[in-house]
Structures are given as C-alpha cells and as structure tokens.
Amino acid sequence: MSTSETTTEDHEHPSDQKYMQIALLLAVITAAEVATYFVHIGAALIPTLMVMMVVKFFIVAAWFMHLRFDSKMFTRFFVTGIVLAVSVYFIFLTIFEFWTKG
Image (cartoon, rainbow, N blue to C red; front, side, top):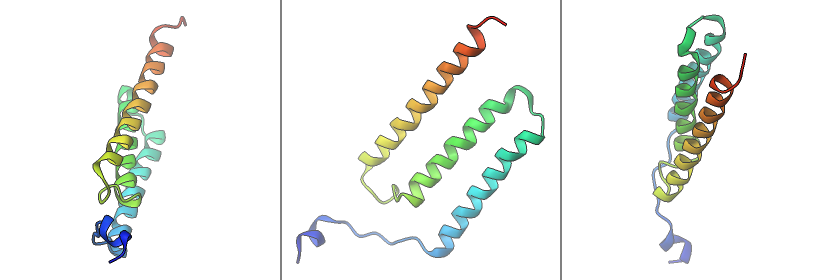
C-alpha cells in the first residue's frame, strides 16, 4: 500500500448527469439575476441579488470545487471568505447610501 492510498479518503465522484443538473440550476439562478434588470422589484433588488449570489457561490464551491467531499477546514475557509466579502460590501453600501449627502 502506498502513502497516497493510506492518506486519502475515496469518495464516489458525482455523475455527469449530476453535473448537468447543477449547471442547469446555476443557469436558472443566473437567468433570474438577469431578469432583475428588466423587472422592477424596488427595495428588494439588492437583497435578492445578494441571496442569489451566495447560493451560486455555495453551489459552485460545493460541487465543482468538491468541497462536499473535502475536509471541513476548506469549507470553513470558503464560508469565512464569503461572509467577509458580503460584510465589506454591505458596509460600503451603507456608507455610500446613508453617510453621503445628496
């Protein structure tokens, strides 16, 4: 038994059909994001887009970057990154929206 066989955990790789389902889901979410340009949803625009962005981030990270099958430490790194990015975005959004004149 080689070293790589003893240190890696095997997992069942998702099928091509599963990847196609995930790609279709991502396409639907992207179409919904684009539709927000044509449909006036008022004050719900930014929260709606942010939710769709975070959902797409998690789907891509979990399936295409294989975080579902890797160590939980990697998942924590990605979650920390997205939480930090969204927090910084909201801080700047509130600064420009509420703390500027005009």
